[in-house]
Length: 101
Image 1 (spheres, one colour):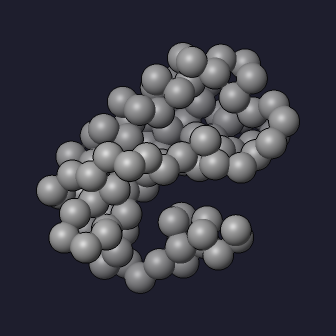
Image 2 (cartoon, one colour; image 1 turned 135 degrees about the vertical axis):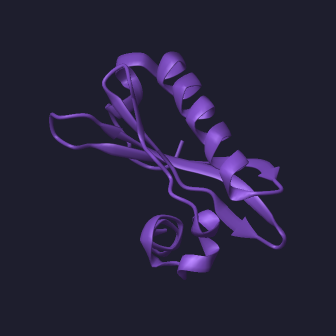
């Protein structure tokens, strides 16, 4: 399982992540949403990381089935999806298991 996160958020070759574009994190309701699209074949899979802003620095990765033609679009949708997850989970987002959402 650790290898999955390493590849998703830091261990994959740079051409497999972000497509050479700058990805900016967005703070939403005390949560930092970091887009992390992943290249699969000729498309980009929606993914990201939700980090607790301040506090203990807890975080939760998320990866979805949605695929996009370019990294920029996948990153934009990752921000949208991250906001939905924050709204749906509320305070329970960082309680309990810290595995992927």
